[in-house]
Length: 106
Length: 452
Image 1 (cartoon, rainbow over the protein chains, first blue to last red):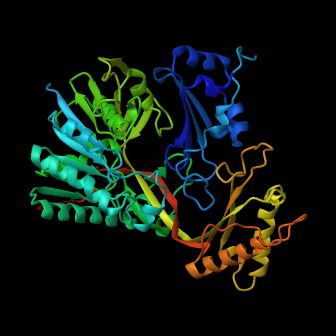
Image 2 (tube, chains in turn red, yellow; image 1 turned 135 degrees about the horizontal axis):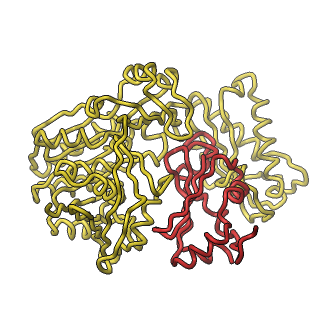
Image 3 (spheres, helix red, strand yellow; image 1 turned 90 degrees about the vertical axis):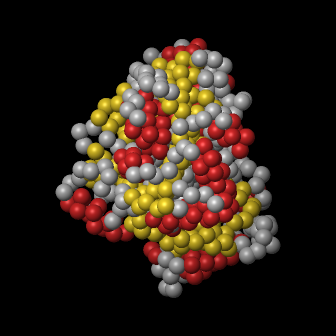
């Protein structure tokens, strides 16, 4: 199943001009736990999807909001000459089709 | 402790506060009205240029709505981060609008104006004392960068707002302020629990974004001794336990810990409970005072003047090799102009929408060939004339570039209008985003009082 079929919100935004943050929110505790237990949201995967080094990535599960937060260092600071997305609001798409396996790979 | 009704009217003052929702909240007799007018999210332009993001008519409409309601209900009004970036020109423009509205409507009140633009010498002195450090993944600050900044502001904490209110201000127009300060100042004056009201302030500064469905309507925070309750003033927006909890994620790097001037707000033990279909009760956040009081500095420097050309491409033969063309044409331009305009004095970049104009070059991409792409030739140079010249040369050479297999010899671009060169104007870059230790939370933020 794809992440977009399980989540109720998949969004990106700046957290200040130097960080990009991605939020994945689920409609039910079951959906949240399924994704959490699959282990699919991990630093390696995010690093590959976004072409950014793993050192700058932080993943925080947030059960009260049935959510995951993924924060990374922006490769380009918001509003710099070659920036493409000042608000960072259209950087969520690589997550949409992430395949959530039924079982965690070991 | 009595119920304190904290009314957050706007998280982006100047773009139209929904009137019906606003009036619904006013009828519930709030103890004060707060509104946030600024943000760093809009990028470096407004901070650098001194300009306000919303248009004057809509900004004045919102300000007028709040000023009249505050006067009529005899409750304080606090506006933070005046004029988008909260620097001196932003603050003065906002105060000017407040004065105009007061004259037009015959309103009289004590106005506090709080400055937040910081003198460069003061920052350089703090720098030499080692009292400035990066805020996140930012290089260390240098005196050179301080000098390059057009303008540096600091985010004020609650203290200057409290001082202004203590001096009898009925309306406070503050320069750059921490979003929470606007809504935390009065609860702090009244002695409520700091963990609670900081958490409440953190949520209501975005108005009804914490509701389901989220929106821009005003929100009421009902503050008590041991909890607070959130209620959107739009009848269809429900503050649910999950929607409110999830709001801690919004535009934040970490949903559990928030750094604020003077301390950290820790949400590890926060609890959320729906009291009915519309309202959620919250408690459990803790305030951890910091050893040092720090303020966040924000600065922007000028980087040049931007000119762009926009045009579309439909030719599949060209689109198939557009990456290569986007490399070859700028090379050609640099070579053509190399004597008149040295290539290191300007920046030339092709943005190709439909391909990777948004995702940028880093992200892996698929093999899909779009039916149309939109090209933006983006030039930043030392002045408008140079930027226009480079843009023009790039446009002409792209228009008639002879790529392999070209059949469409009439031209490579469809222009939607003329002139295709658009002068965007001055462009800026964030070059200060640092924390500065201060001894006195008030000293950086001078307060003026005016009886209007």
